[in-house]
Image 1 (cartoon, chains in turn brown, purple):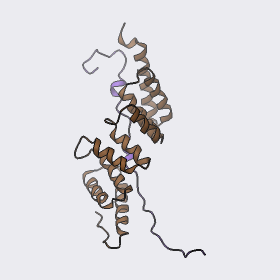
Image 2 (tube, chains in turn brown, yellow):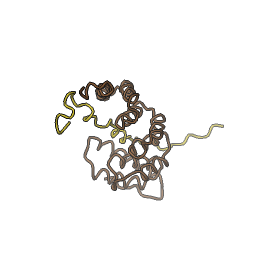
Image 3 (tube, rainbow over the protein chains, first blue to last red):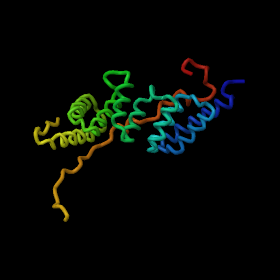
Image 4 (cartoon, helix red, strand yellow):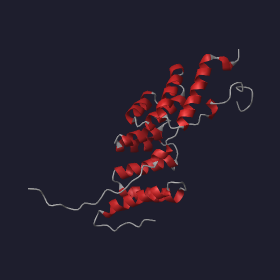
Length: 171
Length: 43
């Protein structure tokens, strides 16, 4: 009997096809059901666990996603996802700690750097935030340059509220 | 009794760009066509 006729493998393969389809259509409520079918027969499937976290987050279920990450001991692999949940749950200090303790690469990979900079903004650490944005803007070229420059202006506006300082130069 | 109106700075617009990085992992190795498994070096 060939491997492909194994009912468990066939189920997983079909469910992954659904995850892919619904994920591409941003139908995350349906995608999460397909992921649950995989986890029903393969509860340790790392890819499925990752998919579930992303689906829950796309559905704005940040508390549930965060608990799921901790329960399944995904802290080491899903650093960005864990920190982003904490950011949205208003646990800025914890989010910063998650990134700084969990990052294996220096400099940080772009998504962690972007998130860390937003966390600095929420923490009102505007000087650090300004430096981080300048560095991101210098090193990135994507479709969000305008939005990033808007964020940089927001940082500058907050720094300008301090009457003892000059309005920082925005590149 | 009502205090005088005072101007306050408006809250600057701030975009969440980190959310754009939130994506499903690659499912390429999970979606290979049936029958190919083990048959090729890429399978």
